[in-house]
Each structure stands twice: as structure tokens, then as C-alpha cells.
Image 1 (cartoon, rainbow, N blue to C red):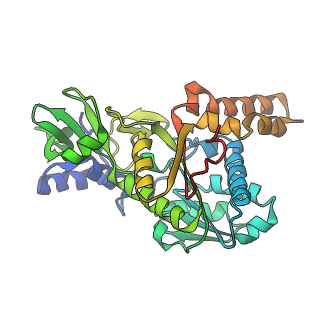
Image 2: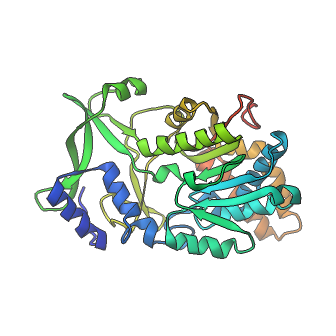
Image 3: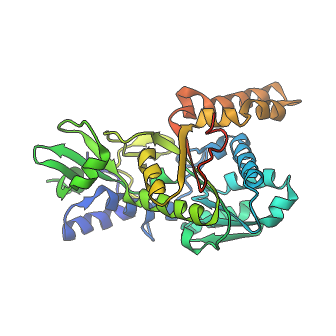
Length: 363
């Protein structure tokens, strides 16, 4: 695999490799996505039909409204006290939070008790969010640690798939880390580096692996899951993690790049394509449990939304609309919940301080 598209970031990456040797997949992802000057999330507008990919909130308001209804139910069922910290990590264009707040506004008492926080590092996305959410008083943060204490209702939709991963390949000499280096033509290429996977991590994975298999590990994801869990454990409330990935640790290479709604090589379009990997929900749950929180699920996004009344709400939304509008709503429902669309690949994990399973994880 070679990088063939010249971008401002490509020269920087090549020079870094020339000076310091091959970089890990995690280092490469971090540079491509978060480089202060040329990083994808620092410079691009990735969401929607004009961007590179479309997230569930951008497909239909139904998604955010049902998340809002779930959060409202948590406020009632847990009897959460003022002030409630409503947090979204990685809020995209602010569409999900806008839909959530429209539902929460139906209960003025909850809205009055709620402080709204967005964890966002991209200056360009913050501008979009401020415009989208101008009707509300919102505080922006670079990380979760700066948010005041208090009962927390937190949502992270398609956050973890964009966090850096390390890849290890099983070789004759054990698990060796895959790295990005330069080939003989001085183009980017992926190869085997000198890094190894610790015996502890191998034991944790509990895998039946064969030579050539790839294992993905994301310490950054596990660290954020730990922070979320610690906050929920100490303050009460609940967190929803929604993303695409696998329920149990497994081998496989899921590292991918998306540009203009099409898959491209992960080594092309440096800083101008979205880089992601499938989320290991078992690892996130284990990280949360280590902090004393309770992990529920994951369950499929389709099952989650259907249990919360997706079809019923779609019927309400389509009532009195044109046939064209009703057809679009049906297509949106299918895209969000059908097993061959987002319904199965996308999963929902819930973290709470209590062992009591919230709906619909108790079904």
C-alpha cells in the first residue's frame, strides 16, 4: 500500500519517519486526525452529504429524539438532583444535542436543572456547534476532567471509532506491532515493527489466534471509558456509548479510511480522509468495570431504538406528511435499525453507577 496523493500533512509524516523511524498505527492516526495545523478534524467538515460520512443524527431526527427520551427517563427513574451535567463527547455538528434538547425541553424542570457541556477539540466544529445550538447556554471543554461535578448524563456517538489504535500481528516471534514506514520508493507503507504485545495483554485478549492474525488495541479508548465510568460512579447518572464495532475481543484488521462517502486507502489523503477502526466494546466494558461502574450491553442499535419506540415515533412524524416524506422516513428508519444497515453493526453500551439494568438493557 502506498500513499500517492500529495497533501500538506504527507510531507510532515514522511519527514518524521525519516528522522525517527517507522511510526505506530496509533501515531499515524493521531497525526492524520489531530495534527494542529493539518489534522482532519482540525481542518475539514466531515459530516453530512457534503462531507465524508453521515452519522445517525444526520440521517434522521428520530435518533436524537429517542436518545433524549432515554435520558429523560434516566432523570426520572434515578431521581437525579440539580445540577445535572448533560455531556456529549465528540458532538459533531451539534445535531444530536439539538434533538436531545428538543425532547428535554418538554420537561422544563429538567431543562432548568441541566447544565450543557460539549467536549470538542476542533475549532472548526465548535463554530458549527455554536451556530446550531445558539438557543441554549452551552460550555465547551477540551476534556471530560474540566466538567463540574454532579449527576451526569453523557452521550458519546461515533467517538471511539476515531480514537487511535495499535495493531499487532502474530508472527513466528510472537505478537509484533504493525507500523507505517517508507518503502524503497520513499512512499508510505505498512510493515512489521519491533514493538511487541505484552503477555498481560495477550492473556486479557484470551484469543485463539493463528499466524498472520491482527489484534487491535486502543489504550486511548480504554482511558476515556475509564474516565467516563469514574465520573458516573462518583456522581451518579448514566452514559451511552454508541458506535460500530464488535461485542467481544476478536482478531481482524478493521483500520479504514473514508473520503466523500467512499472507502480509500488508509495511506492516501493524509489529513483529508477520515480514519477509523471498529470499537472493542468488551474492552470498554472491562475498563468501566475496573473503575467500579456497571456496564450494560452492548445491544444492537436497531434493538435499542426499536425498544424505545422508533416505529411509533416515525408514525407520529409521518402523520399528515406527503407520500414522498413518509417514504423518506421509512428509509431513514430502515437505515438506522435494519440488520443489514446500521442496526447490528452499530451497538449501544450503557454505563451506570447502579447494578440495576436500565431499559432496554433489561429486556
